[in-house]
Length: 456
Image (cartoon, rainbow, N blue to C red; front, side):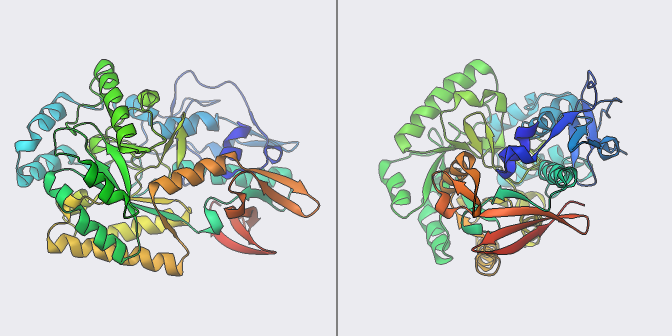
């Protein structure tokens, strides 16, 4: 249990003391931990709810603090893994992630006009707004759980502050990355224009390239992207929606995908349509993945990881998709503004998280959609200038997050210092309680700069 906060906040393990206050239930279920965190896992003292709807038991009522140790009625590590890996989905809905109807749809999809696809997708997604969990439009249950545990640690230890290593380099407030899934030959051919648009706003992005069947992928095409400072990510194998149909076929495809990763010199992977099965990720030989949505209400495979922070799935770093895709915004929600994106950005920034956008070259061809995309880039540029948001690429986030995971806080005569490769970019921060709320403050020289007020 004590590793959970030290991994998330990179704080000294000695400042965290958690234990269990009794045997856990045989079956898992849903409960909450304060107002902001819906949890799924086994529980001590009662059987948690089978569904996330309705009134959920608040585990905060059953927390006991004794002799500086916090006794919890659940295992927070189990809860976090259940949410990040979407273990709760099968128990809640009792269904296969990819139905036979969905398989048939993706077989016919290349021949279907966009208008027909849009109609079928709306039928499939009907009732999405009534789903109780994950919360729309951004679910921060994992992040709120960590905040509440850190606040309890402050209270149990009786200390004024707990040191931690700040989430982003140079004390940046949050992080944003742009990713472009290239789905068709038309999308491939418009990539140079999209790079021009990105460059005009000072943004570099990754291009997710499909290796087989959709279009030809030449070395010249890949070189033209990389030479301009953009990144290459492998996007599925052939985008037919069948990557995770069965284990045997997946392993065969994964071997081909890994080979393309080496050929393209690509560190990252994203599955088609954000289909995923995290238990099989060990077959993918990539440094990072970008296939898990924060909240998947409007994706064919529903669920979501309920966090706005990167996290490790074995050796792979997951960079969750934390914002609505452009196709969904335009064709499902019929929204041609950046209002939803701005709302999601605000929620993610309140947790100092990662804003991960998917904008397809294929869907910003027309002037109307392109103007919306340019408005988004303009807003991100403003946030970089005014809110000190780190605008970067997926590869850079991957490299930074791996460095941060290896850093340690060491106390000497001058206070807390950071040790490890990349420490010159890292910043010490402190968690304190002010007015019953958690406050995170980043150390800049000898001054502390307040960054957040979160859990109560």
